[in-house]
Amino acid sequence: MPSDTGFLRSLGLEFAYFSGQPWLRGRGAGGAGVVMRFERVRPRRPARFQPLKSREITPKFLDRTIRALKRWKFDIVTIDEVCRRAVTLASPRRFVCLTFDGAYKDLIKSAYPVLSKHGVPFTVYVPTAFPDGLGEAWWLALEEVIAREDRLSLVIDNQERHFNIASTSEKYQLYEYLGGWMRSLPPPDLSSAIKDLCTRYSVGLAALSREASMDWDDLARLAADPLVTIGSATVNYPILSNLKDTAALREMMMGRAVAEVAFQRDVKHFAYPFGDRAAFRRQHVAMADEAGFASAASAIPGVVETAGRTDLHALPRIAWDGRQRSLRAMRVILSGITFPAVKRARG
Image (cartoon, rainbow, N blue to C red; front, side):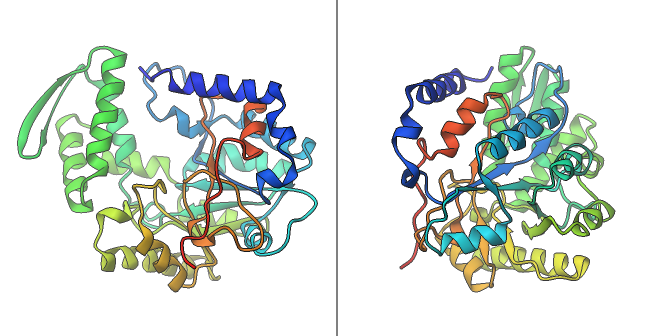
């Protein structure tokens, strides 16, 4: 089962709210604003085993969030406006920018109606192999296999391994273990490992990946909306730190090129796949800058500072944990109380 860490963190955020700490720290403590990172938006599911639940919110919670942001007098801005405010002096009001990773089908089905109703801008980062039906959502396939089975066997480091996973807690433990192992593999080895696992347990990796992803028609509908910014997230959504530099640069440049041809517009904004500290390195930040992207978004938590103090090519974002439903906790996080700013990586 998931650890108690999330519960303790939630408790700490609630305490911070009622203690008044965020408000006592003053306006300057929270920087110019924050970029929020979401992945899936869909109705709550009853399944006991949901290892990716932290990456989901419901449409109802998205609606509550936007209403709260307006009530709290945040400016809800585009990613272009984030870049502008990050290099100017502080505005009287702080901003929030809404971004969505993965180009999931849920965005057009469940999130877009809410976002459109409120008339707020947002950014979606597209890994272009997925609308083509060629991407491999290995993390979803791994969840599907473990959810179905009570025993599981696969080859790890040239050795056949066997796992008993009858209980929900054993399933969570195995997902964490295998997910970490797969994340460490170079893309060809990762593809072979997940395909082997799916073949053994009759999970359709290609069909599962297509079903979860928007197609080009969905994306064209979003791109026609002036409130939507289309960004790039490589072609195949690899962990860049597992690639040679030439392959990483090719992923970044090809993802952008495909998106620009598809949408007939410049694609100026990029997001590192997965985006945590292990997923990309300093050289990838330099690549994004040299490639001409106006920004490159990470999943490293932090606030956006003013006057050029935040590196726009390692742009911090706050990833909301979908297991929490407390707007009080969200307001504490948006204050910047829990996260230091991500400073410029280069002079």
